[in-house]
Length: 76
Image 1 (spheres, rainbow, N blue to C red):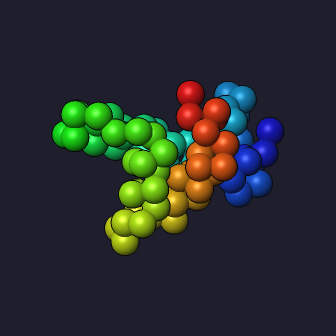
Image 2 (cartoon, rainbow, N blue to C red; image 1 turned 180 degrees about the vertical axis):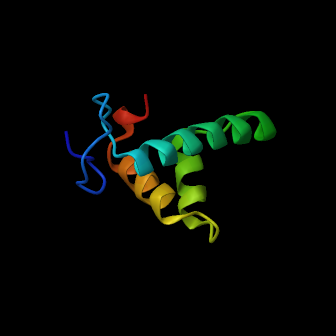
Image 3 (cartoon, rainbow, N blue to C red; image 1 turned 135 degrees about the vertical axis):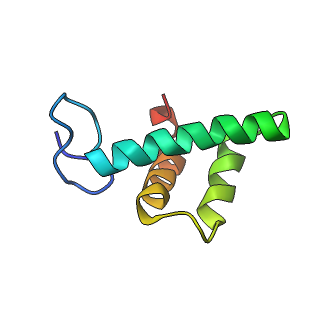
């Protein structure tokens, strides 16, 4: 299956994303947990908007953020 973000082949175990975007998704999820703990609570949409604007956000993470903004049901 092709990665919905970049079109590259997915991970061999049938994952939805290529290895790079799978790692980026996990990092974004972990960052959300850290932000939610730090801020007490933060909506996923607000978190994604903030991360998208950060200068230090990498290319793969930005790709995942944009994908999740367009497909919030894929947050899982």
